[in-house]
Every structure is written in C-alpha cells, then in structure tokens.
Length: 268
Image 1 (cartoon, rainbow, N blue to C red):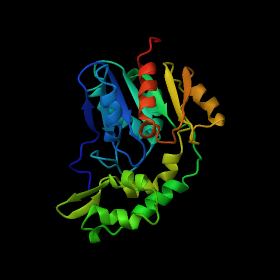
Image 2 (image 1 turned 90 degrees about the vertical axis):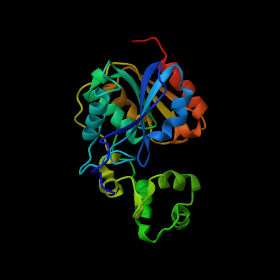
Image 3 (image 1 turned 45 degrees about the vertical axis):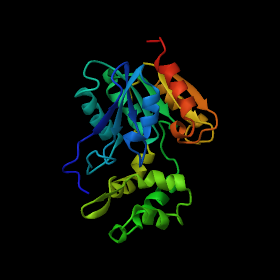
Image 4 (image 1 turned 120 degrees about the vertical axis):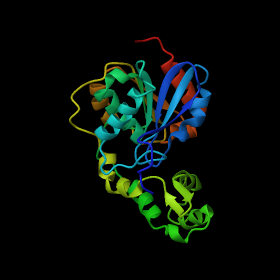
C-alpha cells in the first residue's frame, strides 16, 4: 500500500453534543479501537477517533518522531475539531506519548490530558514489539487467499489469539490481494524512536492531567514519576485494578468511569 491517496490524518466522529474528546491509539492500533469507549461517553461527550500517521486510513510518512506525529495531530485538530478552542485528549501507549508531546508543544489545543499506561521515558525493552513485527514480516501475503490463513501461520510465533486478532486488523484485502494497512517497515525500523521519548522538552503543561496505569502492567513505574510531574505538575495518578497494558479494552467500564470523573471535573 502507498500513502498517496490516504488522508494525512483520518478521523471518525462519535456523537454530536457535549465536551470534545480526542482519542489517540497505540502502536499497531486504529482509532476504531476506542469506539466502545466513545459510545459509552455519550451524550455528555463528543469524541474524535484518530488513525495516527502510518496506521489505519492515515497517510504514511518517510520518517518518524514524536514531534512530527504530535504536529500532524495538531494540524488536524486546528483544521476542525479544536478550531473553536481546547479539547480533551486521551492517548494510550504510543498515542499517550504523542498526547504528551502535543500538550507540551501545542498547549493552546489541550484542555485536559489523559495518559494511559505509558510514561515520558525511554529505554524500555522493545523485544516484544520487535518479535511481533518480525513475525508479521514472515507472512508471504502473495500466498494468502483468506485472512484465516494468516491467523493460522501466526499462531506459532504469536500464541495469544487476542493479540493476533489485534495485529491482523491491519491486514486488508484489495483488488491485488492482501496488503498491510500500517507502515510496518517504518515502524520496525523506528522502534528505538517509538520506545523512547524526546529529552529536550523544556516546557511544562500546567493544566489537569490524569495518568492511568494498568495494575498488571509495567509501563508506569515509580522511577518515571519525577519526570512526569516535572513536565505535568498537575498530574493525578490512578491505577485500574485487573487491567494490563490495554486498560480500555480489558476494563472498559472502569476506564469509562475514570474518564467521566476526570473529564467532567470542575478544576480549571
């Protein structure tokens, strides 16, 4: 697939009234991964689900950095959803890092920020993601006649059916056969960037921030708190019990409750 005909940042709106909330998904994801959460927030909140660059129906880029991705999101928001003022922003994993950089570089766009199971830190182990991307790269798409064949071939290296299903949402079928909708080559090449975080962000974001951790996840650690509170001094941390890294899909009711309480708060 090429990005020539793709929208720079594809979006889907859910709801038509209430406060505006933007959702940024994680690596391998798509905006639609937050559809259930967005629908549950109605009618008090109107949501915008983004396909981040190199994912879903958004355009591919030739390089990748969190500054580039945050600026692309900012341009899309200024052109429509945030044209009339600040919006709430919720970002998970890689999308959480983009959301943090967005708030620091474009604070005039962000009212309240929710960072889901990720920290403003780099240097983490990317072995799991390297394994997943390497496994996807072994598929010979030209031999596939059905999506189930891809699932069968991946069942060895990726034994969790839920993870395979999540990854295979990126496999699409067109006139010329199957193709990857996500820019897997770039994502694999830039894994060190994805696993890192910009270290030259000197500004702070002085509006309310909710830092959500999954109880069974290790992406939010005590040693990250100093950096988080330096960049985001008005941070409140919440841990969702029974959740791993994919908090919103593993504990959706608890996640919606947490969002409602924070986004509907009165503190300015």
